[in-house]
Amino acid sequence: MTKSATAIAHPNIAFIKYWGNRDHALRIPANGSISMNLSGLETKTTVTFDTTLDSDTLTLNENPVTGPGLERVSQMLARVRDMAGISTYARVVSGNNFPTGSGIASSAAAFAALALASSSAAGLNLEEKELSILARTGSGSASRSVPGGFVEWLPGDSHETSFARTFAPLESWPLADCVAVVSQAHKAVGSTGGHTLADTSPFQSVRVQDAPRRLEICRRAILEKDFSTFAEIIELDSNMMHAVMQTSTPPLMYWQPATLAVMSAVQAWRKSGFPAAYTIDAGPNVHVICPEGFQQQTAQRLKEIPGVLQVLQATCGGPAHLVE
Ligand code: PMV
Image 1 (cartoon, rainbow, N blue to C red):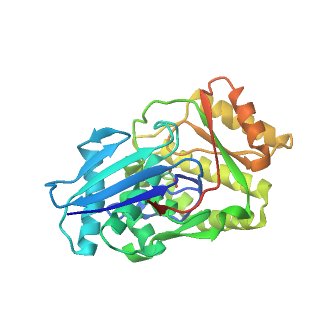
Image 2: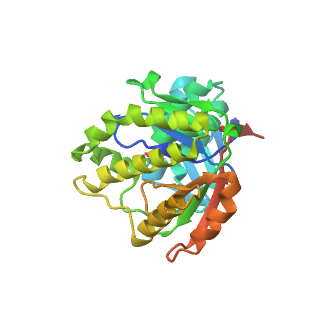
């Protein structure tokens, strides 16, 4: 007997970043975070519980996956089996429509789609909050890919209180993300490993203590569509996270020369009145955020910077959802 469901989820870009955990196993974050889902970019995942299987299987972009990648997926499936009171193994088939290594975190969309597809295939009808909690256990930022639009992950202090919710609908402020890809190499230290190093930086406690202030400024700037305040706070927050990364033991230096070239170009554009702001995740590629009306010009300007290999574009996206 088989039971199947298919879900689509979008990646997200954090404006106030998540870095470091209070509880690594449950991925309860050290601080709250704010993000925007990215439309046009998506992960589509089909989960089939099949009584003839004797273990879980995973196919990603048409390639079979074993080892740690499969193990992480299996952990979420085990959680879902527990919740549904079933013991059947599942076949997971997943694909992204955006290139891996493009500086777009695929784990957020992947675990949001997996949480929705697996829980529905298991016959659970989870509410958005419960889905966000489930997605969080696979990848912290996946909690933010469950609701749509502009999202805040409330850090909480337990499994039940740490989840994300929409605080402004996607239509409320048409922003675009132009991703300046400067390297396609696989990063040496991924975010799961990086989170465990955060507390070795003397700057992490300062970053975490100041987070409620940055969250408030960012939330308000989004609600008031105040681009210049928004630009300043997201660049500050990204710089603070990278200061923590760079001062961890061992240090994590994700920037490359072209990363800095884009950062300084964006700051110069803004000084001359052009509305754009940068934010950088755990990698060298730079997300440049601008009002949608400036998207084409931003992408064009980025392509002219030496070292920029390609520019991916997205606007504000909706929630994770089931498809036929
Ligand atoms: O969810 P993870 O473990 O991939 O961590 C995401 C970390 C950052 O992308 C650097 C920041 C964020 O809030 O998305």
